[in-house]
Length: 216
Image (cartoon, rainbow, N blue to C red; front, side):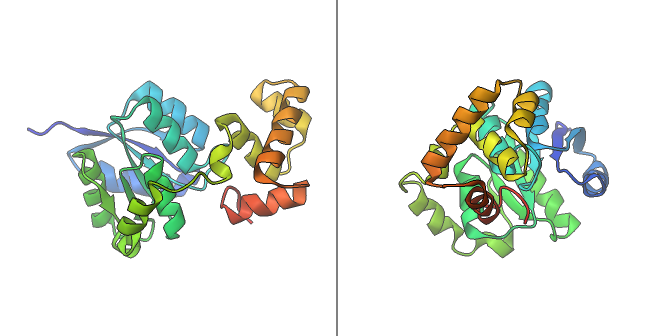
């Protein structure tokens, strides 16, 4: 008898999580061990539960899916991460693969494709949705040697604060949320603006929307 594949579902929409859970739970070889509703919780639950596969949405609160993927892959490289998203942008696909994702599937895929993709990455294979496969392999090879982007220069903490700033939170609110001093948050903000070559919050918001760090 094959071992059961332990899966963690990470998505901020409860109805979608329930749908995915229903599809995968119907498979005798798959067990859903947890559900996370934001990127930070996804990282913490991955560390605590040690699933075989993490299904990761990109657009989540607090920490985006590609950053959560990077953190999980960095400390738990044996966990296979399957990106499950509505976004088919080639740059996003490449970024997720660069951060350690084993696969990328779109949310409009049929249930059978989701099951196949989950089992495939669970076996240690790579999987890309047919809709995003074209051109990605070559782009991924080229991007492996690409120069750092401005976003790559940000630390994990700076990326968290960038999302919160772009979401409209004040320095004091961010400090309380992250258990930091206002002075420390302000210093991070200055570093973010300098590294991204931005001059005010409106530019920061436009940058975050363009990079799909927040929703427009």
